[in-house]
Image 1 (cartoon, rainbow, N blue to C red):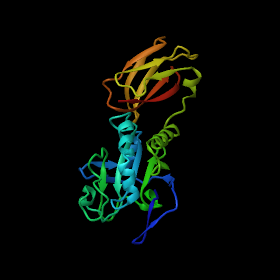
Image 2: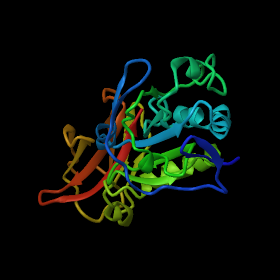
Image 3: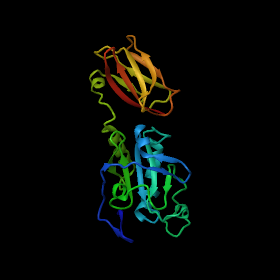
Length: 266
């Protein structure tokens, strides 16, 4: 499978896979269902964004689409999974019609809508996204965008499902917004299960430094829960009432924040 390039109005084939790295430019787009998606707002909530820039007439794009890797990735890591990512399909040819997306137009490989479980964006000229940023080597380009520094860390167009999962996990692991957890590691403190549904367990039995309290914040920095430790070595924290999303749990003493751990509430 090769990535399809655009040169004027001619369609040419590239000779291999490409990855585009750099800062993702902000955008606000509306999907075909009327939903609005603001890139920086999504990233600021701590989500990795997986942006598929494709065209309905593009054969390699259709091959990726019919493999259902993005659909399966969204099932596993999107809002109904671990809730760590947001997937967006961006139809990057301004001449594409809704009929093309439905598979009934004259410029399409098939039905792109049925079975797709993530937003589809189809814009007329001028496009909100710049090709030099989001598909510099042609279609398809599947950008993995890291939230902390808004960097495009990978192009996974030629990866299978596991390769996409690995790329997303790498973006999460290297995200500068994820504060280092050396103190937790050194003290053998564990936070589980992660993702959590009803209850979060915090095991502090090996901590060498006194922990006075635990604070849970959402990705906007707002405190949603404060728990007094009072010498306890094991906490059972109820999280069922929290909205699904990404949270930070802070370990504090009277003088400072000792360590921070990210967790996901499903």
